[in-house]
Amino acid sequence: MRPTGSPAVERRMTADDGSGDVDGECCNGIESFELWGAAVKWGSDFKVNSSKECCNACKAMCTGNHGPCLCDTWVFCGNKKACGDKFGECWLKKQKDTLAPDKQEAGNKIMWTSGIVFGKGEGIVALETEFGAIHVKLLPECSPHSVFNILELLGLRHCAGCQFFRAETRGLVWDARGDHIKDASFGPPYALLQGTLGAQGTTFDTIPSEFCPEIKRGSVAWVGSGPEFFISLANHQEWKNAYTVFGYVLPEDMEIVEKITQLPTKFDVWTGVNVTILENPVPLRVRRIKSNNGDLNHSS
Image (tube, rainbow, N blue to C red):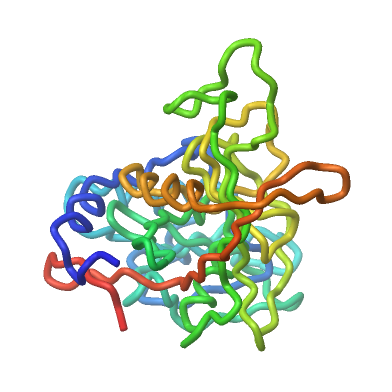
């Protein structure tokens, strides 16, 4: 693993521009869900027409170009009947810790829709393996349900059973940049590293299908509704929007992903599909990355 606070980690984190593969128009939240936090703009004085407009107002205060985000949480009241005179209120807030948002309320009686925004160098977690830490930028504006599930995993003291178990190279189907080679098939191999975040002894809440960008090299997406997921080694335009993308691997860490896919494998057949399985699954753990006075470190 990389040493705590290593220059390599810091370079990658500060280089992150927060854009990834996300469509700039993507700005989603979770309905019937209220995030608390210190208000930086009071909704009673700020009303908008939609949750997307509220989300974009928060994003406008979190460009990443002038220090920490002034806003990282938005809360919108969009149910005219339930909201009454609060209809249209857009509360912009700031969390003490964006990876552990303040108290939350959820349920059918909650009239608010909420979401979070990660700025430059924020919202990055590590999938730690014996071959190094794979840093993943989470995409709450694209897949908020998925991201909140990952944030819950950060609270686990262990992740027994979490592992990578399927590894498929790019083969002769995609080039080193992940582009499809003309006239080649679309697999097998399928250019992906598959694993599970289903920790033994814990309940994994199934993930609803969410808006997602196209699968590109470095995309991290659920298989179905989780807890199985995969990291793509290629640009899979042929898959369109079939999988919910909840993050992307920071580019320099793709070498670790490639290294794991080169480990010894064996063949298997899943529902008529030829796959390659790692002879020895690679255990992983989801860990948070914490910034402290400019130094980026692994949190204990």
